[in-house]
Figure (spheres, rainbow, N blue to C red):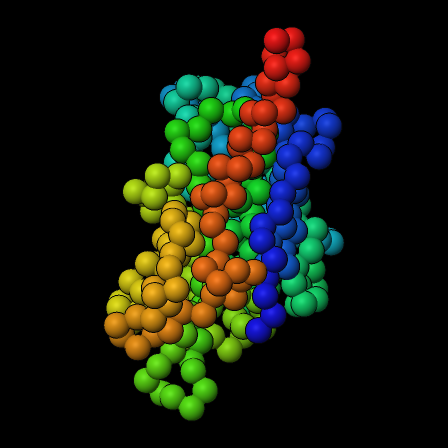
Length: 266
């Protein structure tokens, strides 16, 4: 399989938004904008906390049921990490514009390919978190996400392999596809979505692989499992991307830019 490049991001590409980010990884490119806290309409007001509104826009046309499902999943996840209690009766709006998807498999410019819903979730979530950071919206933690697929191994019925950052083509032949998101400390599972057929032991194996991608550097020895399931990281490096390190570097870059005036003054 072709190697997947490391994640790339551009912070604040949209000048009229409170915060924005463009995130590219595994063939997906998503631009996110974040605005808030702003005054919510009376029908959307919550007297105890801010309302988080997420909009997913396809590359062309208008969104359908698949986009609405993704919006619901992302809204629940982002509600967990944003300090919504600090902004009662307010609105925090996040708009996610899909720019491109891999291998021209973004059929009819909608998310209606089996497995594609899950495949694009990490890019959507990661771009949303980066836009919130760009907007300086208070969060109790950040989040990192990974997508994985369980594929049958040719010539072997018993052995399967796990592929990270799977493509829509991989999803079409996979036994199951999975997406997980973890808090910055790695102690909290923020998102777990799965499609297809899998056993609980396989789910635990995929969860462990996702945790290594999102929360720590894994070693080459971790690529083999006790259950006969091989981990094949479809990424640009042997051990896969260090998502926590990537996010930390991005935040450090934002802080350095914000403090340039202070350094120059000194």
